[in-house]
Image 1 (cartoon, rainbow, N blue to C red):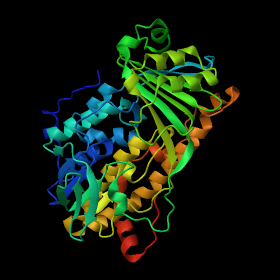
Image 2: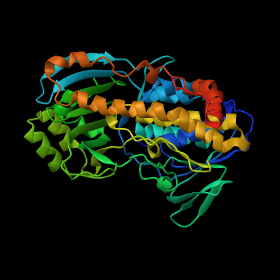
Image 3: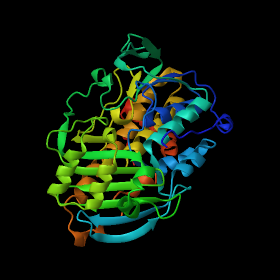
Image 4: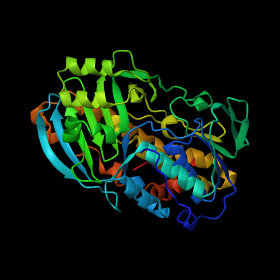
Length: 441
């Protein structure tokens, strides 16, 4: 079910590649951000290799949203948008109170991934597989089972060392290996408080095959799509949390935001038990429908992830400019932002273009321009995630309709990351070298 396969052997070679830059790029982390950065760097003429700590792909994660700033951009990769569209679907969206009362009647949310649309909803595992298969079709080398434990920058090249002691070097090393990246030991943020703080909440989550669960009458009735090829999206509101339910013909995915009582950790793979979730649901008199979803989940597919706050880190680049951070290694997002994946993929567009414009002789400068162009945008998007989470917790029923309108600004979704990089690169260089005024827009 989640072992989705994509064949880009015919489409990917049609990609229009920029002239060779001679820049060797090593990307540490084969998740969404790292893999998308790999195909972006390849397109810009750079030589790319990816190393990934996992032994292969897993099914972790759930259904995520990619915004139009990315979906519009993937049209430059032959066959890739068509794959995105294949993974997306129309959804029926309903809002419930936690006891099962309907607050907002079902409404159809058509898939909107076309040019100028609002984005696509895709399963993280499918998307990661899709990007990997595209990279492989381009001939990009991807080495699995390679956990990076340290990074270095000798002033000429960047590098890293694996758990087994293997040493890697490149003109620039991209740390795309998540919140636990050891690149933080090298890339300092002096004078900035980046201490991790609890948000006060955690999230129970699970993704599992729908086929068997839909044989249970109450689950089939309440959560299965009524039209093949479509999806169901539900938000359930409680006084001390909320749930998001996303289903389609093949997958059931739930996220239940709940008060953090100390048992969760900040790991996607921290397992928990059904009993723990049921205790929370019972205490809040949640609907039996939600209890049924939890009971149907496989015991080994239930997780409890602590949601943490971090102040934005202004510096993502090593002192000599040959190691840079990307995605969660640079900026973490709460799930409520519905924007973390989009921002991680935008990073790759910016970085690849900055390196192209910088050329091999000015790699460090290109890295610093990338950092400058990205920091404010990602910081504002992070804050939106904090605000959006608070909006839905304890929201009175009579105020729900007023919150349906998107609260994110057009600067988030009406954005062209590649065009913006080309537009701002020169003035940002002048700012960094000569101190001339510069403002992100």
